[in-house]
Length: 271
Image (cartoon, rainbow, N blue to C red; front, side):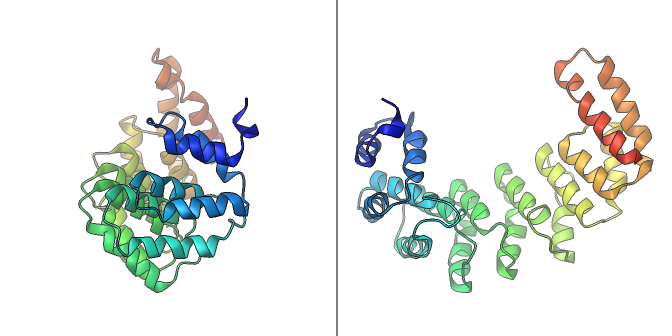
């Protein structure tokens, strides 16, 4: 029988009895499509459980229960912050922060301050979920924390924090630009690319030479093309054309797969 035809209680039972993660998100996802009091009350009760497993199930179900608006969103957010008051488990804290990231539209100053306390947490998963939880917030302290996290020792955290300040925020300050410049030579290609496009979005002309250098080295990608189009500088055309010639002749399927993207960028830049 299709999961869609199962009762909500049956799905909760499967989640609680499962010993592996194989169908975890399928079951959570199906419950999230049922924004009603039955599912909400069951998940709310689980989130308040003493069992780590049960608590995490409840937290995740509530996170995206219904959409626009979430079902009982204010009550859910209040629950998350109440749980954070005494929670010590990194797994549960990560689940809460992840869930707050889907419900962070109306966080107040005190709630944001509480989240920021986790910026130096020993567990990278907690710091990573914090990065998501405070992204898109037009809040001075949240932005300052994202800037700090953009220099985290964990590459995934650096990447998402750089994305957060570079593309998810329109703010343009010296601190943000400096943070983005600090990631221009990041060992992680995606993080470096996020920094480039973030600076291009702020029309920082200094990034032009960095982009040309990337094109000369054949180090390009979707984000670099986005930065090029944002700057709308036709001086990039010769370098794009040279890369197109190389890609067209390359037997490597990955390199050859960039032909269309290069062509589209060139055509758009010529307009």
